[in-house]
Length: 234
Image 1 (cartoon, rainbow, N blue to C red):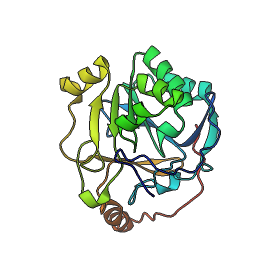
Image 2: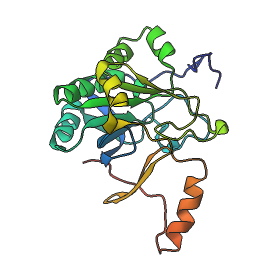
Image 3: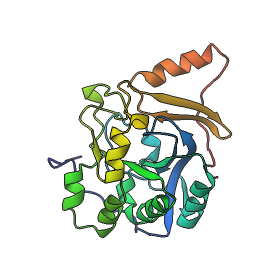
C-alpha cells in the first residue's frame, strides 16, 4: 500500500457506507487491565484499510467480519459494567467508523469514564482530513495512541505496539490520566490472556514472538489453540 508521510493511504479503496447508529464490532471484552489506565472495557471494531504488516489482529481487516450492533445496545452494555474506569476502542481501525464511535464515546463521558483510542493513522492526518465523523470522534478522545504498527522496529512496551507510535493526551482528563499515580504507563509490554465462554482472548501489545511462545506453553498444559467461529455479543 502506498502511504503518505502521515501514513494515510494514497489510493484507499472505497469505505462501506458509514452509519452513526450501528457499529460493526469484531470483539468485545468487558474487563482489561492492559489496554490503557485502570480497569477498562475494550471494543474492537471490524474493518481496516491500513493492513500494517505484522498486525496482531489481521482477522479484523475485513469489514464483513464481526456483527452489526446498535449503538444504544453497546452503550447499555458499557453502562452495566459498574467497576470499569474507562473504555478503549481498537480494531480494526476505529476511525473507519468514527460517527458511531463518537456517539458511544460521548455516552461514556456522560458516565464519568474516559476514552482511549488506538489508530493506525497519525493525528496530523486525521485533523487534516475533511471528514466530519473523524473530527467528531477526535473531540471525544482523552488519550490517542497513534501511528501504524511497525513490527520491524521491535517491541515498544507499555501500551504501544511499536516504538513509532505515540501516546497523546488530547483533553485535560487525558493529561490527568497519564500524570496521575494510579495510571502511570508501564515500561514493559503487558499482555492479558483470558479464557472466556467464546474462547481465548488476548489483550495488550504482545511482541512478535508472543503467540509462538504461547501455543507450546499451553500445549504442555493440555490446551490446544484452534481457529473457530465465535459469537462476540454480549
